[in-house]
Image 1 (cartoon, rainbow, N blue to C red):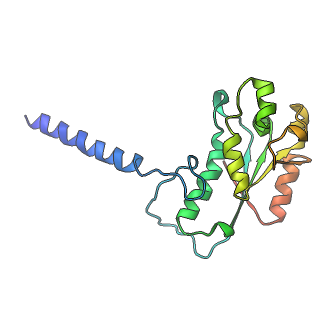
Image 2: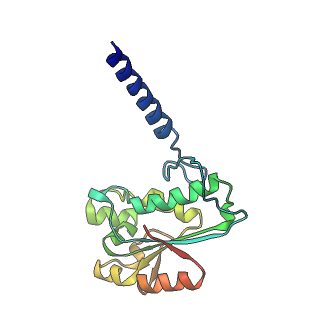
Image 3: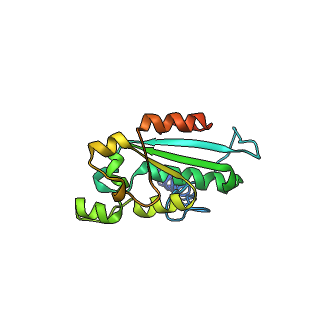
Length: 179
């Protein structure tokens, strides 16, 4: 009987812990559906007011044609900092895309033409662009993947290379997120 009671208590505590942690993840307050985050006890706190300038490097494509986790991480960064009191006017984000992720910059029409389905990243990328996130494609990767500027999602810029884009962002004070 003691074993049954202990086992039941363990299950209840584990269930409560799982529900409290997993149930707290939420999207927004800037980008909804994407960028889920959770409040945490912060031992290292960001001093306010703060200006955040961060560039993310994304070269891996989404698994099996799914949403790219790298783009979702940018939405999470924006959402969690806004939820913790950092003004979106003080958050400057950029994504430099190269390698296998390059084809995810294709407009829905170009992506459909190439893969026969909708680009799973279009909606999120358009939401990021709408929220002032700079999205830059490596020109060298674009050339390798035979991607023309006219085939890009509207608002995506082309750089000479990913290395060039990172150099430009670094000169403007952006730190690189080691995604």
